Image 1 (cartoon, one colour):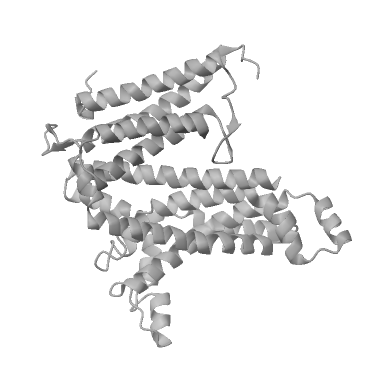
Image 2: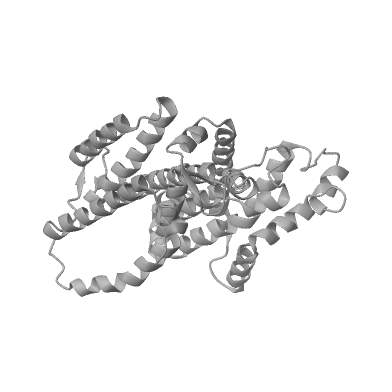
Length: 289
Length: 93
């Protein structure tokens, strides 16, 4: 490969580098500094070494929150990705229906996260909420405040309602970019509906699916606002995900050292899983071409 | 400028300086030998030397965490293991 001759172009990257430095790198450095020290406020710090990391790695509370987060993300991906593809395949490709569908699909994405939480908190209530009241009326014992399983059901349903349309819109963008010639060739060959999906639509959606999986994984793994508003992490700790636990530790208990150590471990897990997803899917895509 | 709010310590300053120097070194390497030296290694997919550095650093972080969790607080052995791991990654991945 030729050596680039115009090195001045690097200056164009400088504003982004400065922005990333102020918004990400400097805060991350501060968190690393906090993670090896203890503080009681007043900007006074005492060296603690790796004690907080050891505490976190042996903490049952951390293990349970991590397990809950992994299970939640796995369920979310298992539901939203196939559902998003099905919805995208069902959406019209031409006519007035396209605009109507796009607007309807975009609506949940425009609602602020805490408002989504509030909507579902009310929606799920047995006394005044449509969902809770209806389920009770048909004889199902549902109460997300009391039963952990109901709390999980509500949060998963809420996330599916909130974010499946993102997956659907991304898949739809991938679908409409497929040239008509591919479908004509498939018709001439007498390909079945499944064959068209498997060998034309799915490979062509690969790139957008990669983005969808990455976005949904990272977002669901870092979820905070919606479950916090709906259940506050309860009943008990049944919906206390890592981010909720982290805020409780850092802001509620003012344990900045352990919270910083937890943040770093959390960050490394997100980084590792995102890298694995990205590598697997980009290589699968290359293999498919 | 006052950076006291960042709660700096000597070990963390050394840690970040090392990371910074590694990145500068990678920049110099890229300037001397441009293109990123892409190749397909034992993981059976293409990696550039930037990818190999990322895998080395991320893997080293997990080696240190595993050492802390399973063995104890003496991280010098974990550092040695991480360096060996980085050499393996740069040689064969």
